[in-house]
Image (cartoon, rainbow, N blue to C red):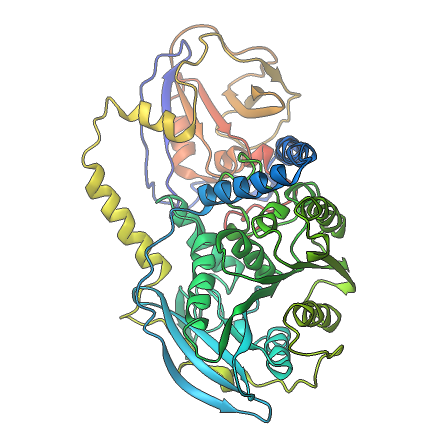
Length: 568
């Protein structure tokens, strides 16, 4: 815990009437005579599986509804209506879409190679929000099929070896391929700092920047996955401005985080004629059961509530041709990919195009390795007829600097917008639009936002009285832990600090009490936070409670760590 975190204590009576004592931004002082051995005690964590199993149960229920809906499809008409329904539901997750504005595309350099050329492209997916990209163009006459390439979580974005390889391989086979840097990667860092004369990300490239930006966006009603998908949509817009491109054959492919984007793009953009998502498609349920970490763009808002699974984003494109590329040793569970394919095969069969959906499983671990790249080439070649090659052409890997679109290697400047600056601007606009909120209406508004029942029961919820764990070095010599069941299988852990051991329910007399809601761990903060220790010792006659809400402290999942707010 550091002084930058806000702390608040709340005083209330045990009878339930509420008065609030807010204690915010307390400075962190030196430990005033505190037993320093208290700092060495690990935080209590007696319910480490609670949130994991609660999540799995909820996801399993949603997954079951999704599967049953597809099992009910019996006719071509049923299948067509289902495809339209998933398109409509996906729009509720990702929409509303922003207005398309001037791409302001510019070519900053050209690399000439034997069979192809690479143009260094910068375009604006939103006003003053530049995207750095490489356009690989085959040296052959006439119009050629084209592919948008989406990158996984590579620090160097489009210059990563696997991603260079598929873009260059496509060009050598006769395709145009536009591969662009994701937000927070390659030349598009959003949170830059200078260290030892070098520019680097303040939080960490890729996942960490995505989480930082995405969590802030949730507060203003935006979804980073849509922002990233929008970059892909605008990349397609740019491709279709090129005279070299055949608009009858435009595909999308990507691996890992790029497989995520390929999957989402199949659901939000109707102009694709073919797709090859790699190392992503499984099920939300397998990801939850397998304790798979994810960053913000991989979790579309309301997707589970709307009955959507991974395969539904591909179903939105049905019956156009798609190959699902999986790996036998991938952490994205190949069993989920097989299940998704099986359900899509049935859908495509009802639509009269059973051969337009395929599954390829490479033998190795996660990554866009050559066996999966060759499966992608073969699939696109079958559709376009541009080549009959069965193997990847010889690839020559370029240096990062050779492929850079900018002199410095970073596009952001004081003059360009960033995700953060646009989130800030939207927050200020929303603040202006809503004006002053009447304090009397605030509880109702909070209930609506948090989906909290407006009329809570007067009777206290059921609770457990847990076995006492002594010698925790709190400001009072004894404590009792109550596990309050807030819904089936979910507990809020509340400590009552006392002068003498207590093994029963709290006192029933109605008098003011202090309830401290922990930031990360009541157990740790009751020991480490000087301001909190002083608050307790200054009120010797006041009952003090400290609470760990679900997901922190006593219920911190053992699938993550104490600092996993920013790093899953």
